[in-house]
Length: 94
View 1 (cartoon, rainbow, N blue to C red):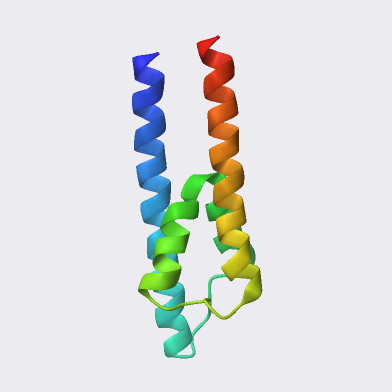
View 2: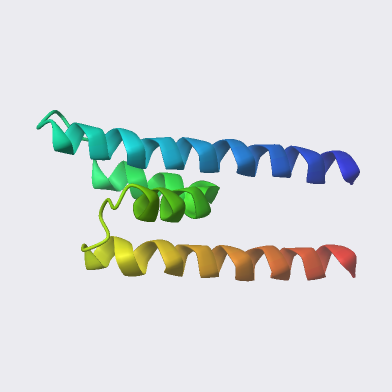
């Protein structure tokens, strides 16, 4: 049990760092008119556990904050992930 929790925490830290960096890279590419990271990729990173990093990157770099899809989408994904974690945790404890 402790190993599973440890690996989950390591995964979440890694995927959130990747999401944060993806927002930074996309912002820099947008600034210089280069090829961009597809929005779908940013959402996939958030969906697979990187929503906190994506939200942090969005506000740190002021990137995609005016796009309703991101402004609403990332927090909704985070809320759903929190609900999922609590429901799995409660089922696992019982």
